[in-house]
Length: 104
Image 1 (cartoon, rainbow, N blue to C red):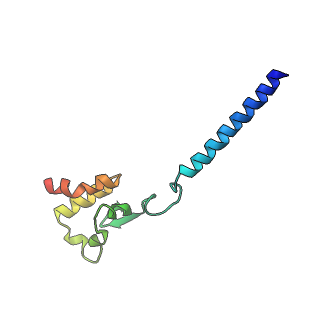
Image 2 (cartoon, rainbow, N blue to C red):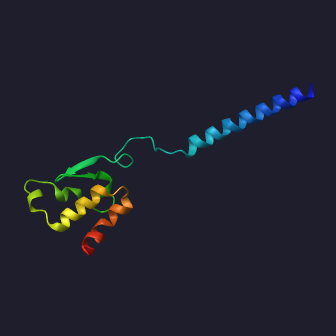
Image 3 (cartoon, helix red, strand yellow):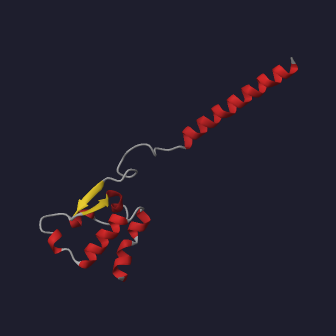
């Protein structure tokens, strides 16, 4: 009978530990499942380059590459930056695109 009571208490403690762990996970999980333009990254078509909208956080004015006739007047630097932003997966990489293109 003593073993059965110990097994019951151990099972209850194990259940409480998992239940408490689930509460902690829910508290610290954050809004990563919320779809917004900062977590998902909506794509913009800028002169044929699919650029992630989050690169505006990197300091780029993405509206600069919009407008009539703008795509025909792109410089090599503009093409380099847009190509780099299209390939950049993170904001940190996107922030370095300008310097990398200037170095070329």
